[in-house]
Length: 135
Image (cartoon, rainbow, N blue to C red):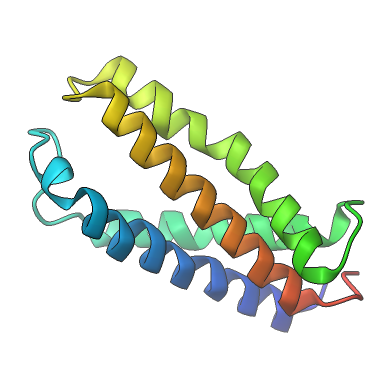
């Protein structure tokens, strides 16, 4: 295991999460998210940050054992998209099925698009970090 690449990939996942899910999410859906009564006005960072770091760590460790073909960026993009297809349905579909989310369609659209953009970008960044030699 290349701990330097794992650390850099985890950091890339964390930063892309903050940029896409945080800044872009609130730029496009801030008023919508703030209108949801179960959402915290000030998120509990001590819960969300470790979850993001752990997810990034696991994804970065899994990347080099895949057999996806292509250039490092394309391979990472495909990998990230696949990871998104695994992770996003829980947030996009399960959460509104259990909580009173206003405008379920808006929730699914926002979470789906932001999640796939985030996971794809994170995958491409991890692909760049690993380069052609992903092992």
